[in-house]
Image (cartoon, rainbow, N blue to C red; front, top):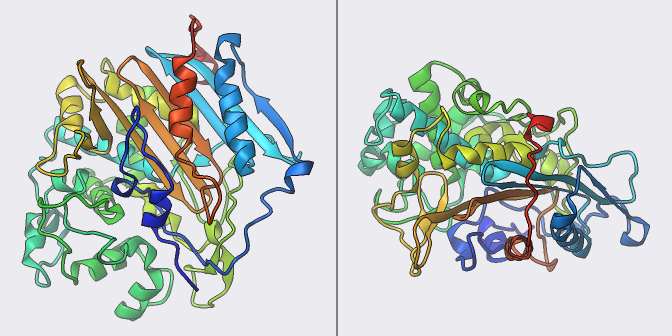
Length: 431
């Protein structure tokens, strides 16, 4: 069997942020599956599918609907969702279905796995701890978590800030992403599947780093796993509990929760992939659909484990507009500050949980993040002009299918075509 790497998927997905991106810079959360599997029927043949959209649609924003429709139909995506905010007002909240299955129709409140859009959420929780004086960005991960540094003394130089900015020294293009190496880890440690987060940390801490910390940007799911454990260590609470308390509840976000690999939450969409793989939840070797047990979503909590709606994500993104009780202006500036290295040729970079692009010839910046797992593709964008949106899908690009990164420029085009924006606010309907 041939593995489909996160980097391969990243090449097919352009980054958001008003134009250019380097797909290898931020490929998403996931690794692939078995290339021997045939592509899934994904809720029936296209000829039998019907298009359904839910949620209020202001006439002036019909271009967003047509954009989502053409994008989903070209890729046979069963479920999608879009929310748009303008200057703090929720102006669009829609669920989309392109499926022959009439038993489920996607609503604006349907839950999706959001994959790496979990990273800005985790970063926000960390920045709140820093803001409250309970943690420093210069604090070091190894002593905080009791990680051994015998295998590589450079681990002592991995700080909270370097974890947030993917400068910790782990590089999945050099050594495999430990978040998708369950069987290898279990064998190395002599334990049975499923492996725990503690198992992953023990295994990875026993290996050399790929780079000296602070010298090279390399997107690291594992680094954000450590941030989740740091949150727990500092607060004495579970990762999810602290995020709910400090980040979500102040924004009246009640739907978001951590997802599960093999069971669905109420109202959660189904995930489609043509790939299969051996289960990582026992030693049976049983072949399962890749989104349902070939990776361990529970272990991915802080880097890829959240369920949310597009509504919730745009509401969350409003924290970075200022004026909320979650983060003050100093903390927001910390999130978007330039890292010690990793500035792209045209000036964009990874801040603390966000990709950041300074606006050319103006003030401010555009920030964004993507997410990708087998059965999931997500995008969250904040524009300098007060617009923000989130788009969620229950498939991602596989094989020779059209790239999913195309949704980014398509949504920018739809937004730029709006001549008169609605003056109302749908927030009270959903929050």
